[in-house]
Length: 146
Picture 1: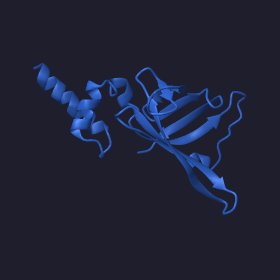
Picture 2: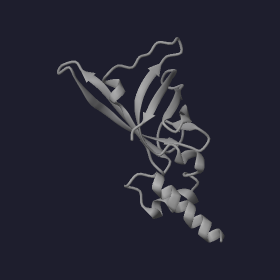
Picture 3: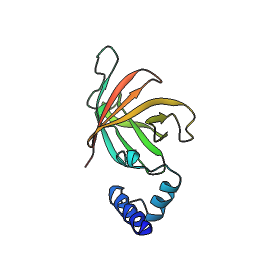
């Protein structure tokens, strides 16, 4: 019965992950404890909604708000940064970072989980709040991309 329930839970987690993840990837992530009921809520793509400094100043703009981050089952997420190109006046992706996260709500500067730069909290199933402390303090809110 335990084996059946474990298999059933794996199938449920499979339904929550992106199409690019394989069943073996999910089993490995559960074994390595990078995928738990808490972190499964993070999986997928999130688009920036706002970025607010401690004094209440919202520093987001239309280009910045095109930023999308993707949480993966291996304990990493891809952060794509957008910026307005002053020469062409077009919004462009200027950098892509692979960062790490853990089950305790920490975001790390790189995928090797060495330096905590932020904390995360899933506010509800469609809203994610990241509170950055490095390189500057800001509360950044993302909405789930369906």
